[in-house]
Amino acid sequence: MKNFITQLNKAFESRIRLGIMSILMVNDWVDFGELKETLALTDGNLASHIAALEKEQFVIVRKSFIGKKPNTAFQVTQEGREAFQSHLAALEELVKGMK
Amino acid sequence: MKNFITQLNKAFESRIRLGIMSILMVNDWVDFGELKETLALTDGNLASHIAALEKEQFVIVRKSFIGKKPNTAFQVTQEGREAFQSHLAALEELVKGMK
DNA sequence: AAAAGTACTTTGTGATACAAAGTTTGTAAT
DNA sequence: ATTACAAACTTTGTATCACAAAGTACTTTT
Image (tube, rainbow over all chains, first blue to last red; front, side):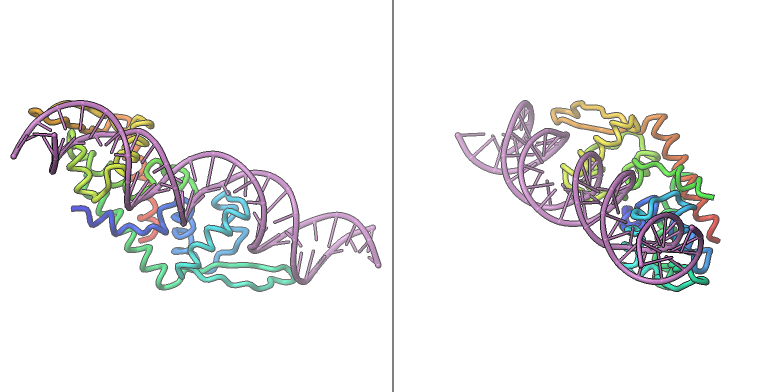
């Protein structure tokens, strides 16, 4: 009766991390600037949310240069993909119960 | 592109409040003790989350006596119902985008 | 009188969110 | 060579939140 709530992942409770994940789920290698603009975040805010997701090993970070400019890009890991899908499945249960 | 995230309501970000609301959406007048057990919360924890929802006017609280025992029960308001449904709709958008 | 039940409130601690400003490293312009 | 700029952080500071545990108030049961 309460399991669908305990299955919700704490890492995905915040709107912003929900946004980051949903973008990374459908786009391979999204870069810092693009993500920042899409979600209308400050640098620091994005950096800290990414750090939280990286700590959980839900995303990986790649630092490189595009031409002469430094570029940081993110990709969702397999683990992140699975965790996020479970989270969404639990949310879906919740929605279903309401119809 | 980012609107479905901004449509997510901050009041419903926590697992616990998500749980409270989903129960109240399908049950009329749920009492303190029942909600507390269903969600496996401490008294204080439930009280504070309810207070947050009450402040937003998403739930109303009724204090009465059942026989000789004090009873506190909660009901979702129309406003709460609408806000929660919008929230779920936004989550559904998010899920849909991923299929 | 003592114990137990209901519903809180208070206290304390630790985590989180966020903005704003500062820092680092490397490139580009003058 | 100095200045300026850009990307991506890190730091700082403040405010809010989550939660457990203990305390409170009132009533009822034993």
